[in-house]
Image: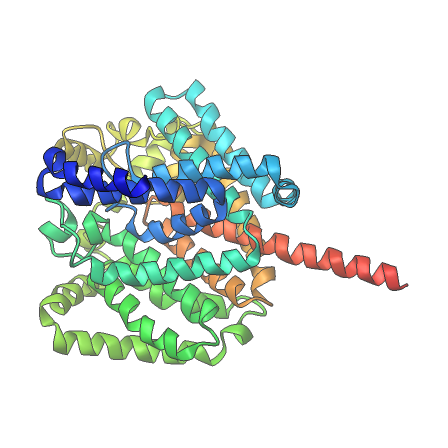
Length: 449
C-alpha cells in the first residue's frame, strides 16, 4: 500500500511541480521522516541543530522563516514530551536549573522580555524576546545532553563547518551579499565576519579538543578551516585565530593542556597562507590587502564606521542609563546620534544599524541592569568552563570557543548569536556530567566507610 501511494505521488508530482516535482516530493518525504524521528528522539534533533548551525543563513527562507527555526521547534516539542515520560531525563533537566549559569541566562532573558514595558518600539522588543527565548531553549537542550551525545554534537558541528567551506562555492550566491559584491567568502549569503568566527570556534574545538588524540584528522581538517577564515577577509576572525591560543596560555593551569600543539598550529597557518598566496592569488590578494589595514589604526576604513556606532551607543546609554531603550531598539534610538546608522538606514530604506559591540549593545538597549546580568553570565561561563577545561579535552575546546566569542563581541553584535548559546549549553552539559561523577564517587566512598 505504501509503495502504491508513493508511486502514484511520484507519477503526479510532475503535474504540480514540473520537472522539479519529484525532487520536491522527495524533500517533503524526507522532511516528514525527519520530523517523525525527532519527535521520537529529541537528541537527534539536537544533533541536527548542531549540523545546521554553519548553514543557518542558506537555510533561511524569508525574514521570519528558516529551516533552523522549524528544526528547533520540533526538537523543543520532542524535548518537552520526553520530560513527561523519561524520569532520568527529567532529573537531569531539574539539575540543569540548579546551575548558576542557567539562572543567569534566564534572568537576562526575563529582563529582555520585561524591556517591552519601556521600549520605544514594542514590536522590535517582542521579536527580540522571541529570539532570546529560542536561544534559551537551545541552551537547555544542549545542556541536557549526556556527555557522549555532546561529543557527537560537537563532532557533527566540526565536520558540518568544514563541509560548509566547499559548499560555499556550490550554493547559490544571493544578490547584494558580501560574496557577490566584494568577493568576501560567506556560503549562501552568510555574513563573512560571523561565519569566520564560527569557523574559528569549530577549528579550536577540533584541533585542541575533539581531535586532540587524532592528529592526522586534525591536520587534514585544519587547512580547510584556515582557508575559509582567510577568504572571508574578516579582520576580527584573523585576530581571533591568532590571539585565542595566546590568551589561553596566560590562563592558570591551561598551558599544559594546550602544550606543544600551539606551535604546529601557527606553522600550519603560515604554510597554508603561503600556499594560498601562491596557488590562488585571485582570492589571496584581496584578503591580504584588507588584512594589512589592521596596521592602519588611524584609518576610518580599519574600523569601517564602528567608532561612530560606538559613540552613538554611548550617547544612547547617557540618555537611558538604567533601563535602556528596549531590546532591538538601538538603531531607532541612535538615529539622532550616529551618522553611520543614518547612512545604513538610508541604504536599507528602513531603520537599521548595530553597535558592533556586545557591551555597548546591551548597555544601550537594556541599561545598566541588563549589562550586569550579561557580565555575570559571561563570568559564570568562563569560571565553569575553566574548571572543566583542566581535565577534559572537549572542555578545553569549549573554553577556547568562549575566548573566540569574547573577541567577537568586541566588534560584532553577538549577544543573540546561536553559537554562543550552543557553547553555554555545552558548558552546562559538561558541568552536570562532572558534578554527577563527583556525587557518585562520594556515595561510593560513604558506602565503603
